Amino acid sequence: MENNQKSKKRSMRRVVSSLKSVVLVFFSCLFIWNVVNELHTTQQLQQDLSEARDLASEILSETEMLEDQKEKLQNPEYVKRYARGKLLVSQDGEQVFSLEGDE
Image (cartoon, rainbow, N blue to C red; front, side, top):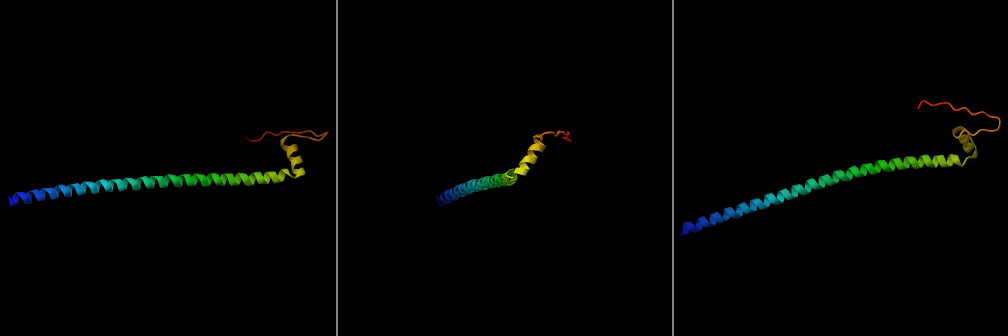
């Protein structure tokens, strides 16, 4: 009888030990999956941040160019030269020649 009881206790301990191992493996897999998911999210956010910085740099550059152009267009002499050169506006008695570019 005593051997039978000892055998049942050993068997129960093995089952409990196996169950503990399965639970530990499950939680280990869960934690590893969470870590991989967080790494993927971090990488995606870094890429988004890089794209946002590039866009901000382009916008800043364009803003500077437009501010410069705005300042130039407030000068009447510049507007006059721009109109004559780009829009082919001429004064009385002048001839305008348009040369083809290398485009």
